[in-house]
Length: 273
Image 1 (spheres, rainbow, N blue to C red):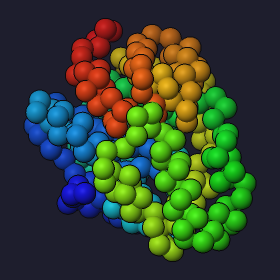
Image 2 (image 1 turned 90 degrees about the horizontal axis):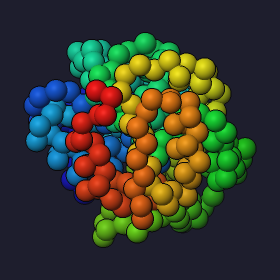
Image 3 (image 1 turned 180 degrees about the vertical axis):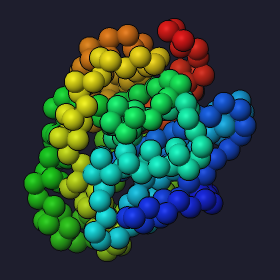
Image 4 (image 1 turned 45 degrees about the horizontal axis):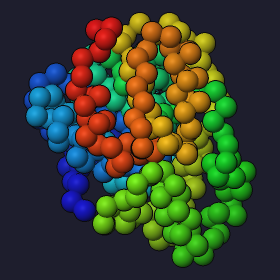
């Protein structure tokens, strides 16, 4: 699939690749794991009709650099995101974040002290007890997973991605998500990033969530099996002024399961704006 990221930003851990489209008020899209900015391919171009949209691949993901020794913790991703915002000259962009992108956006707002115009979080890691399931096994047994035969690793990643969608992928899409994780380098990169994503990095800002003063929108797929609906309710309890919207018949990857309904949420005015 053609999704070029033509710009580069150098960090101590390697090169982050990014792109932008459109013109107008700035809006930044932050992806999660194990995806990349390719997940935004349709949403970004639709939003770019009226906004200046920025998108990027986290270090170690997608088209950004993968190598041993990288710091791929949520804290490091947040520091990189803060530097990207500075590089782009954005002082108060709108931010839309998914999966671990939610934790990255929240850390950047609350601990890196960057300012947003507003924040949309959907099916996002935010806080509470989210070290669970297959993710917990990745944390506990990284070296075992690194030694899997290539075919077994690819089958596991494919099954994990399929578990994230309620209606399934269109032809060719799953293959595009798998591409960065194939081969010896991709397999090492996959477990490297999962082994560094820790709940402690969200616990660090939980006490600050109820002090968020900007407009916040929470959007959640009712059929999310990665982060089930109770995680949306937890986040809504901790950011009490936030709007909460449910998307029926959709799973964790709203970009794939319900792009039209997601786009409608992203282009609607905030009730508290």
